[in-house]
Image 1 (cartoon, rainbow, N blue to C red):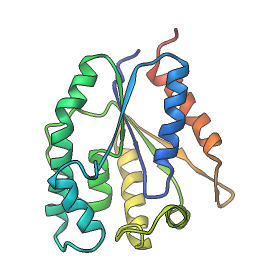
Image 2 (cartoon, helix red, strand yellow):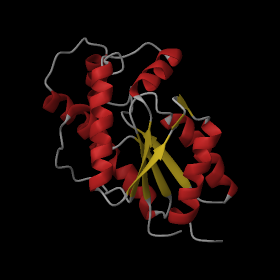
Image 3 (cartoon, one colour):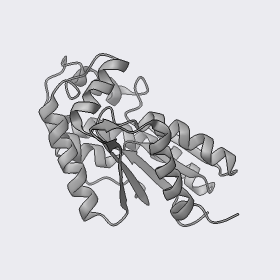
Image 4 (spheres, rainbow, N blue to C red):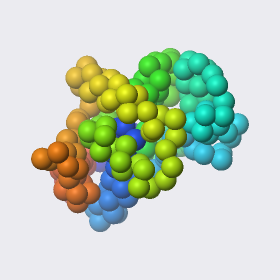
Length: 199
């Protein structure tokens, strides 16, 4: 494997992160690449995610910096496990990471977390993302706010321009979302060329 050890898949709600990670797991398994997946926030895992869940349901009224610290607390509790996997030489795939705090909350906390080697941003039209979320489950306070999703997408794209280790995958074609398989082909190409050395 090349130098890339920590891969982040990120994007606004409804961009297909979980679907793409499931397809990526099959791709990596077919190549015999050892990997682990961690999704943030880790609901039901600790006091921080309990706060986050209440916040997203609209039951907890706090400012952006306070809730950003809850997201950060959840990640800090996961840090030893992430470092263990990295030390074992596994590719660690994070479904959301520090970048999500910046895009959704506008808060960039200084965190002592392993640095992402590559972030793949799944870029989708916020209206389409919102519709996708609605078909899966009830919307939380971020998902039901189209202006919030539009702002988050704008921040994600700005981050992608500023950060050399970000790659944007356009998930849209002719005003509609591409099929999961089409998007996966693009991601697999990135992984094959950037992450994995030839066997």
